[in-house]
Amino acid sequence: MNVDGSNGTPQKKTTAISRGKLRRIATQVTRAIRRKRRESLAIRRESRATRVVAAILIAFLICWIPYFCVSVVRGIAMGFALRINIRVHLQLYVMTSWLGYTHSCFNPVIYMCLNKNFRATIRRLLHRTQKCESR
Image 1 (cartoon, rainbow, N blue to C red):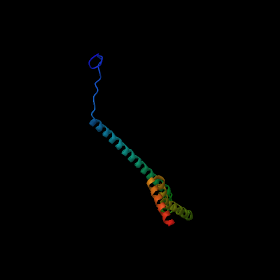
Image 2 (cartoon, rainbow, N blue to C red; image 1 turned 135 degrees about the horizontal axis):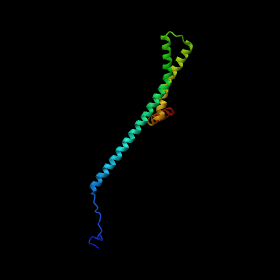
Image 3 (tube, rainbow, N blue to C red; image 1 turned 90 degrees about the horizontal axis):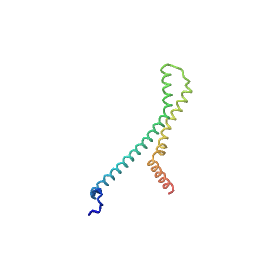
Image 4 (cartoon, helix red, strand yellow; image 1 turned 180 degrees about the horizontal axis):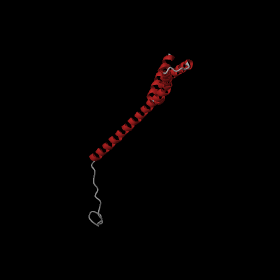
């Protein structure tokens, strides 16, 4: 047996890492994790905002495309001096106009369904009005 207690077999050398170096590594890892969390939160916020905008856009198109179609048909008919049933056209015009106006009513509902902050604010407002009514 050798003096170092190795029985003559080669030993692997271990390197000591200083505490300062360990702290630096831990700090870098912690910063990287925090950065990734912030990035993933930002991506989630952006995707939620995209969903809200897409829902509002789809609702807008559903509500207003019929009105624009009726208006285009009327314009083409007038431009080519075509005869159209005025009574039917007027009823379609009124119905599609009101459908377009209802889009304004859908916006708050869409926001409430898809946005937590908006929902919380509405709850607070309703809670305040209930307190005022009970006085």
